[in-house]
Image 1 (cartoon, rainbow, N blue to C red):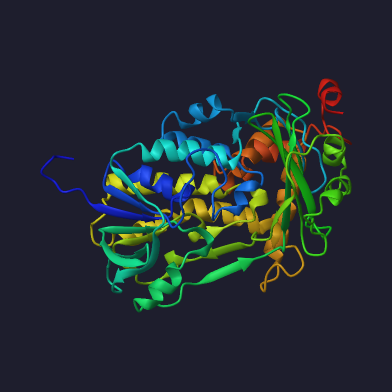
Image 2 (cartoon, rainbow, N blue to C red):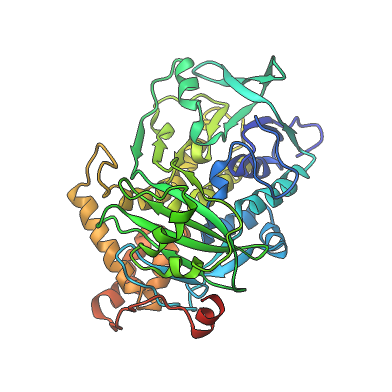
Length: 459
C-alpha cells in the first residue's frame, strides 16, 4: 500500500485464537487493535477466561495448513518447542463411534498438530503481537458497538472504570461463545439472529499425568451415540513428558472431578485401554471438569440486511462439542478467508462486510454438519429430532468409517473430510465407494492396535 494511502483501522474484540489469527490475517491491509478484557500471560500458562484450555486440544490438517498460511513457520516453531505433528493414523490408536478399531495405516498424508493449548496460544501470541501493525489493549472490555443498521462506526469500551469510544472502519467480534453480537445488532434495529443448539449434555473431566513412555501414540476411544450415555476418552501426549487425559460422558453418564473415580471411569469405557494405560501412571494434577460443550450456531449470514463495518468470527459464530477438535481449525480457516477477502475485495467497500460474513461461514458449515451429525442422536440433544435424512447420512458415515478402518484409500478419503481439508462430497469418491462396495474386506481388529514395544513401555 502506498505511503500516501491511509490504512483502514480495524478493531478485533478478543485476543484468543480467533482474534489473534484475525489480526494476523489483516496486518498487511490495516492497522489492527486487539481489545482483550483479561491480562494475558507472558508464556505458556493458563489464562483467565479460557477454562477449556485445560482439556485435550488438537489441530486437524486443514487447520495446520491454515496456520502456516497465516503465519509461515509457526507450526515449525511449535514443534521446536515441544509440539508434535502426529501422523493420523500411524501415530494414533483410535476406536470409532461404531466401536471399530482403525488400523494404523501410514500411507495417508494427514498430520495433526498436538500440544497443550497453553503452548499453542503462547507461541501464536508471540508471533502475532511482535507485528508493529498490531496493538494490544488488555484489561479492556467492549461494552457495545456504535453506529446504526447501515454501518458500524466503532465500539464503546471500558477500561479502569472509564469509558471511551474507539472509531474503526471495521469491528470484528472474536469474543467466543459469550459473544453479545446478536444483542448488539438488535440494538441497532436489526432483527433477531436465527440460532440453533444441539446439546448432547457432554461433561468433560481432565487430569494430567507424567508420561510413562516417550513417543507414545494418541489413544482415542470415541463415544457411541447409538448406545447412550455416550462415553469416551483420549490420551494426548504433549510437551514436557506429559499426558493430557480427557474423559467425557453425556447425560446420565458424566465423569466427575472425583480423582478416585477417574481411572474407574476410563476402565468402564467401551474399551478399557485408556484406564489400563493410566492405572499406574503418576498424576500431576487434580481432575478439572467443564460442561460448556453444546453445539451452538448463530446464522448471521441469514440476516437480510447487514451493517458495513462489522463481522463476527470463530466461536462467536459457532461453537462445537470439543470432542471433535474442530474449533481451532475453523478459526484458522475463517481467518484465511478474511485475509483473502481483504486482498481481493477490501475492507471498506460498501457491502463488503456482508460478503465477508458469508465467506467465513463456509468452514463453519462443514464443521457444524460433522458435529451435529453425531450429537443429534443423543436423547434430549435438540428440539428438532433426527430426520430420516439424518439417519440415512449417519448410516452411510458408519459404513464409511467401517470401510476406512480396513482400507487405506478409504481412510484417506474419510480423513480428508474429518480434517476439514476437503468437502463432505469426498466421501462419495471412488476412493471410498469402490472399497465400500467391492472390498477387499479384511477382518476388523478386536483390540487396540498398540505394538508390543508400546505395550511394554507403558504397562
